[in-house]
Amino acid sequence: MSKKKKVGILTAGGDCPGLNAAIRGFGKAAIRDHDMELIGIQDGFLGLAENRTVTLGPRALSGILTVGGTILGTSRDKVNRMVIDGEEKDMVPTIADTYDKLGLDALVTIGGGGTAKNAHKLSKAGLNVLHLPKTIDNDIVGTDDSFGFSTALEIATDAIDRLHSTAHSHHRIILAEIMGHRAGWLALGSGIAGGADVILLPEVPYKLDSIVAAIEKRRKQGLNFSVIAVAEGARDETDSAALAGAQALVHSSKTPETKAAAKKAKKDLEHSMRENTLKLAAQLEEATGLESRVSILGYVQRGGIPCAHDRILATRLGTMGAKLVDDGEFGIMVASQEGGTTTVPLKEVGGKVKYVPSDHPWVKAAREVGTGLGD
Ligand code: F6P
Image 1: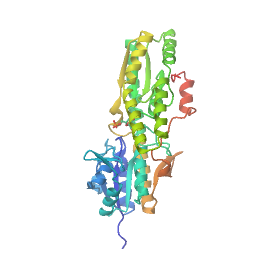
Image 2: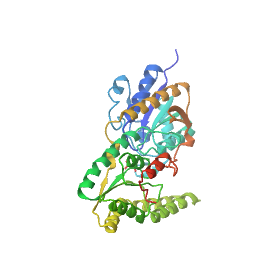
Image 3: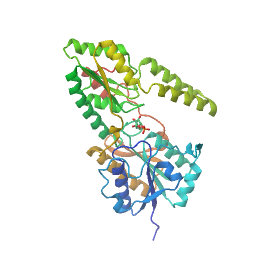
Image 4: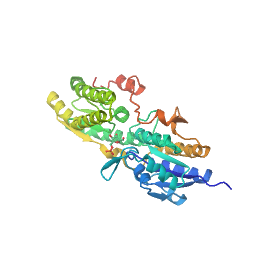
């Protein structure tokens, strides 16, 4: 009789609704249909480096479909630059060692583009890795959809709906800050669905004058309130150019020292802009004379039960993942493309960002109903 395949599973990066649905989808199919043994690794790659595991049998996988967050815990640690005892260390050899000690035949990682980059590093080190895509940002290259996004879209849309009635009652401008520091899918989708008057995205540097003009145009129509959906990474033209310059320096740095210094400079610059939405609200109040308020939706968008779409997506990708592991297919991400399930090599996904293209149908639709993008 051949030995059962032993598979480790972990969640890494920011949490989101649907992670447990994916663990369950993969786990149930792995155990029931493919006769595998499953162990959960706690707190992402950190838990793998530290060999912290839990058994994931049928009992542990039951009742978690609708539960938010991740039963395994998560962390944002990088496999090659993990902070251990206050020092950055390359933990790939340690992780490979734990993988062997645990007797794993495969490792399933659930995360976004950053996690895919870590997964790819482990794959290059010889581990059998398969990745499942999650993120509320929907910014993973190679997949049309990632679980977590649809739930967050519902939450952000609901928030914009609620902000409308209070903005209207008080004749105010309300800015809803929505997650998405690099890609604006969530702000764009919820802005369209919630009927925001202006939508600001990281991909479209905005001009203050253009937003003011959109608000004034509404005022001329007797509408003395406005709701603005602002992605947390949206910036005006000046700040966008400064960030692009800092990013270019990171790319052009030749030595590890200059690269580290350029990365730090970029991080500091981003940090100095973290209150951008509040600054914009003050600028709009001054320019229009309308009272302005900010609602930062924040982590509310990542919490709670997954919507039906995310549960289905996580189950579809998770169960397909179990089949692929059984077939011995590794170094890949399970992806959703044009309604079907497919695979994409990890090297095409890791560390990349799926930005909102300027000609995307959502962008066109927003413009065609008269929603300003601040450009
Ligand atoms: O990557 C998902 C995300 O929700 C981003 O939209 C947000 O910028 C980020 O995580 C914040 O994450 P944390 O504070 O947990 O590091």
